[in-house]
Length: 317
Figure 1 (cartoon, one colour):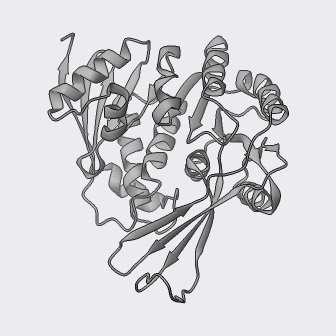
Figure 2: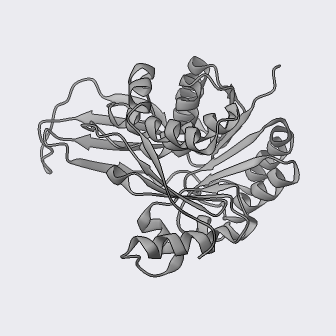
């Protein structure tokens, strides 16, 4: 079997179902047509976009029950190598209701409990899979029974084998993993403020916070700011990504698509600027779609031409 270049980890996957409605009225019945159902969770969104980009991907994490079977079937359709651990619990479902004004209401299940035995089985698989990979992408929230120490273990294991870790999580899981020095983190502004324990009103405050975080040995710190693009601190250089102007259908999954684009650029040996252009274009392409964690390659190629990278400063503050 051909060795994979990219390994994705999704510990708390879900079936994501999107319902398009005229309006959502509580306390009564609402009819809808053709719900969109997909294998979800941040890491699975990343996996799907990487597959569309033509990358070789292996996916792992925890799956269980009939929902887990649905996700395994989706991975098979994508041609992704499935290394998920089968668990006793049922993989969660997440529902999104979008009305005619594009207001989105979500109902998110918390997910199953993961036993110590199931966690140890994942560690066993990762000891085999990580050395085969060039890039490890760890995305999303932690399920019941799992502490952030599992993320920390993955980062250490990957770094021991020279594998770059792209960590896209938030809260305690992110804060407690910073000292391990993953290759890349990508908080949004709110998540950055959560790490700092204070607000960042001015852009210069954000840059200073990013520089401080990078001192942990993190090569790439990206703070996403929605339609305004992204701020990137890369090896002492400050880069601003000016994203394409689009009429978004749904921005859900755009951050995951950005991570997928970055990983693809990294895998192909692109420069930092070309990698960021691809990443930003993937994020924008996802926002043009109703489906979460999905891009159209024709749209992607058009968007790539519309993205610019500005270098605002280099050196030390």
